[in-house]
Amino acid sequence: MELLNNFPLWSSLLAIFFAQFVKVPLQFLAIKRWDWRLLFSTGGMPSSHSAAVTSLATAIGLTEGVDSSVFGLATIFAIIVMFDAKGVRRHAGEQATVLNKLVEDFHKLVEEAKLWTTNEDREKQVKLKELLGHQPIEVFFGGLTGIAFAFTLYYLW
Image (cartoon, rainbow, N blue to C red; front, side, top):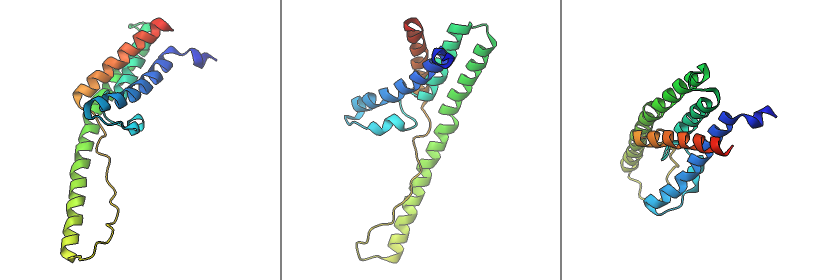
């Protein structure tokens, strides 16, 4: 039953769910289309990774104190995760975009080389997921979401 009283754990998990859920209406406001797949996808505004780790660090700071070793650990962990979200994962997504374009261009070249005259169904192409990481602004707002979420839950808990 102690697990149910672990405020930092629940704050972080709920921050993930909140950040994932809020992506849907934010996307609707931007492009006027509902996309419920965003609930289970990576990337987008706000970063749920950033929300999770900043909520965790904030909740630990509130419960254990900002002078505790575990707060220091959670803070460094949060910095690394957010740096990765805006750096490595974002660049992997940009590379996926280029690779997808190369595969598409290759398939067009093969089609033209064979001079197909019939309208056969094109073989399905496996596309790499391009939205892997985050823009710095998405990481920033994900971090703010996590901190605000932890403070709100702390005072409601």
